[in-house]
Length: 337
Image (cartoon, rainbow, N blue to C red; front, top):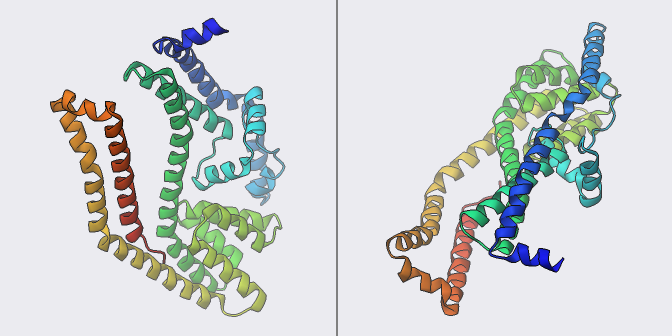
């Protein structure tokens, strides 16, 4: 055991060998996780046959899919067990994946993070010559942060598209209500006519209503998935109207005006704050750009700053001040509407 530790610590060679072994293993596991769903192809074909038959008799997809078993975290047995024991908040991660509009399993998420971690560790160890400890830490950091950041970016992108199309969906519902259609049929029409992600959420609501669920419960689940104040307003308006009555078409029409007003204000704030954001980006990037240029022109002039303890303290203090300043500037141009 001691000889193994000495080998792994010697000039990072052990770390490189370990990563070289783990990288193809991670790729194989990722590919296996991506294509392991083919084992369920006969089951999926049977389900498609049942759905096509039931659609002839007026049965929707939700009535068929309700009989499906709960999806596993992964088709790989040991990975599924690992996720169940090591991830205490699996429901939150599934919710984030659902909010991003994706359908992959937690197992794919974990395998992707593992592959990123191994790749980053290999890059840190071979290209930069970093010690084994630094390579491991950089790999773990990348494997944990990159998938999370990507999901957050996809969620934000989906929310922006939802806000863009949601007022049009409400307008379509209002016209349906004025034409005498019930709210369920109006939501169904919006789900068919409005592009995703609004369309898919409206279709989920319609499917839930058709299988006999309460509209309040369905809208609450949809509001949790969408995670937007605009959809919360819509949910509250329908809940209040169901309890107190009144002209739903007029209520939703007023809500459309409010949502479009909020969207205009957000765009105006974005335009007015663009100069401050550009200043924050430029000022925050200048120290790093100048450091890179000095290092390329005269490495020996700059390397002493990082080797001397006093220089390291100055660099740490400078980075802290830069991030604090950028954070304050970004906070100043961020408004809650």
